[in-house]
Amino acid sequence: MKDKGDELLEREAIFEGKVVRLYLDRVRLPDGREAEREVVLHRGAVGMVALDEEERVFLVRQYRHATGEHLVEIPAGKLDAGEDPMECARRELLEEVGCAAESWTKLASFYTSPGFSDEVLHLYLARGLTYGESSPDDDEFLEVMRVPLEEALEMVARGRIRDSKTVAGIALASLHLAGRYPPAGGGDA
Image (cartoon, rainbow, N blue to C red; front, side, top):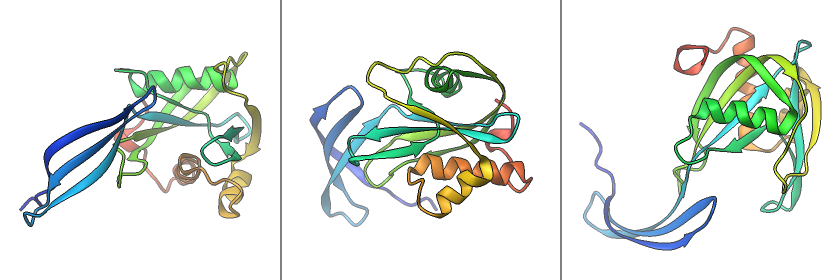
């Protein structure tokens, strides 16, 4: 038997921006009571664990206004309307760190914060890299780093990497490369 979810009764647009849309939903709960839900709609995003020939992962250090901190992250980006996640991953890897990859493996797709948002993040492992020039967006100020994957895993364990997509990507890539985690969706993209 399938669990019954909330029934949407009314949706009020609170804010519609370039990145997110915020709604206040009135819903009927499975027991018949009514409640309000704040919902953020987002097109989705991608993140890439890009490994060079020496098993070093590309990371970017950038200031994140919402946290008030500089964070260390894997290259990532938002999907454009109707954009295929794999194409977005290729574009963002080239823009942020100046790399193209010969081999792409999908690691996972997951909801980032399902308590209030529908954002899905798609994670990929990128290998067989060729190098060129990066061209970040005008409002992106990135410091590109290459760190041995094992060291990046230690940075996660020690709390030096606190970005969720990066934590998940480094952990899943490490497990996958150790043969302990099959790729999501059946393999290479």
